[in-house]
Each structure stands twice: as structure tokens, then as C-alpha cells.
Image 1 (tube, helix red, strand yellow):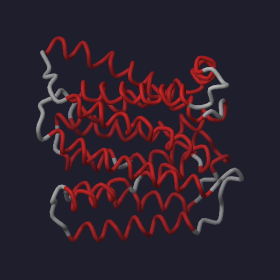
Image 2 (cartoon, one colour):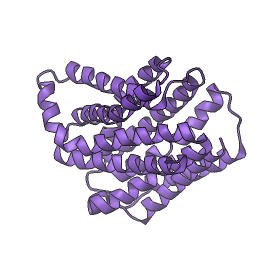
Image 3 (cartoon, helix red, strand yellow):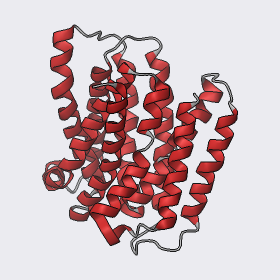
Length: 290
């Protein structure tokens, strides 16, 4: 499979992830338990692919500590923020806000990685800001919509942007296998979320919460594990300028899947679709010109 196909698959899977999480929350409202199940089962999915390939290929193990450290926060603790955002704002609107991550990532890279400022970034900024404005002044929203969900989605997008830059920085100094790096990140995420569950809500046993969330969030875990595998394999086979724009389409996929699977519960209207197109266009422009 080439980089284009893998990157497109990653975008589709990340878009499906938001909808799968929303469907899971419809059965079990435990955001923290759902986040742990998603990360831990996602880890098992990608480990099943990465470990045999690494053993056969004699993969480089050095430098994996950096990916473990990143994984504690993203997709670790950030997964709680992401799931709560979907619980409060819905899958489609969270997916659109998450689409601002490439812009935030580019802004951080300008400051910390000395990447050059390009005119296209200004155009992308305008597109994303207009898309965000359409969300703010949206007339039709689900009855359960809470503005705090959009704020949480923006926080999650910021965390994803930090992750992108830290991983990019770490990749400059290591030859670690990308699939193993993703496995280590998801494994660290699962451990961090397990520690969070154990430290919070002690009156409710962790095992009981996991048993309740397991069937509801198993589809989301499958999406997460396969999405990470596809994305990092794509990066290992193609340039960032090819992979990042295709992966950025996850916001639009999230809106389309939400409309098809969740129907009226998401209240997907023309304004939301236009907002998604603008945000995705901005993200694609950022990725294509970096």
C-alpha cells in the first residue's frame, strides 16, 4: 500500500473514530472509562501488527522513550478531553474543531522549530477562522449540545498540535520504527489512563467501569489502532506534504459519517458542512505548503 492510500485510510478512520466514540457514549456515558478502553484496545490492535513486523525486520528500538513520553499526554490524557468534547458537543462538531490542529501545529512550528512563514498560512488561517465562525453562529444544533464541548475540542486540537511537533522533533534524532513508536505511544497512553482511573472515583472499581465500557467502545478502539498504524506507515512511505493534507480530511469524514450513522441526533445542516469544508481546506493548505 502506498502513502496516498494509507494517508487517505487514516483520515477515514480518524473521522470514523469520532462517530464510534459518540455511539459508545450513547450506551455508556463514562468518558474516562471509554477513553481507557479505546486506548488500551487500540494498543493491542496496533501491537498485533507492529511487533511481528519489528521482529522480522530487526527494527531499531532506540529513541522510543520520547514517543512513550508523548503518549502519556497524547493520546493518553488528551483522550479524556476528546471523549468529553464529543459527549458535550457531538461527533460532527468536535471533528470540525479538531480540524484546526494543522493550523495550531504550524503556528507552534513557526515559534519552536524555526519553520518559515509562508503566505499560504495566512490564507489557511482565514479559511479556518471563517469555518469556526460558522460554527459559532450556527442556528441548528442538537438539543444536548453544550458550548463547553467545543472548548474541549479546541483544547484537544491544541494537544494534538503539540504532539505533532514533539514527534517531528523526536524523529529527527531517532531511527525508531514508526509502527513501534505508535505502539509505545498507545501503550503509554493506556497506562496513563489506567492510573487516572485508579486515582479518581475510587468508590467505583476500575474493573467494573472497564467491563461496562468494553463493548460500547470496542469499535472506537479498532478505529484508533488502525488509524495510528495507517498514519505512521504513510509517513514512513511518503512525504509529509502528501500525507498530512490527506489525513486532514478526517474532519469532513467525521461530519459525513455523523450524518449517515447518527442522523438527526447530530443536526448536520448545510452550515456545518460548509464549516467542515473550510476547516479541511485550511488544514490541507497548511499541510501541502509546509
